[in-house]
Length: 321
Image (cartoon, rainbow, N blue to C red; front, side, top):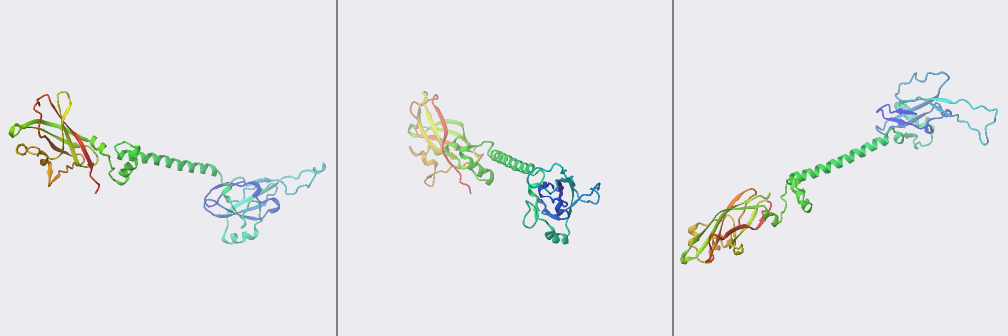
């Protein structure tokens, strides 16, 4: 028999084994809805010949009439030939919400049946219509939430890291995306993001005929973090492209030509010092600073066919505040 909860309308399909049989006609049974936990009554009676079973029923349910085989059975052996099978007994059922008084009286009027709980109230959870389909829909919903949530998580992390996912530094990328923390970059990664541009190369003649090479230019920080202790390496290559001289200097220091000319021999490095220590060149993300590399003493065979080169030598990220 199919019925619906009179309070929330949840549908159930009750098997015949738990319905009142003909010998239990007139009894009340309590049912509990698995959705709203409403307790309602199921009344039963034997339908008379030709009775209009739809009259006098105000509950919403299906299949008011359920054919039930007779309760009496023959014990042992086949039925006698002269015995005729009794006609099936038609039971009528009605579902309605119990009043407070009926709910109290029902416990004494209920006849226990198979599958009913001790308090004689049948929980209808096992008989809900489409309960398996509902469970499948819930599982599908949970799976969809997990799938699209994971997809959105990776998309957000990628978007906050310039659409580049690095599996080796994924934890740092997640911190940057969700906690606005700057990822710790390796020195090699920082150097790649330093763009060095040469502007001018020339030489100066000092006292006693010494020849000094000078290279000017600018360096731009293309990294997402600021850099400090930025050092540049200047190289002088002969026509055979062999490195003859190397010089490391900090950027953001540009001694004037007058300062260079008045510097003593082997004292050019002092131009890049501040209070006895090498100048700390700091370049903020996206900013550009100037530089000037001075080679203290050029070879005597130096000419216009020689080549000056400048590139990043070392750098460190500026620590987060």
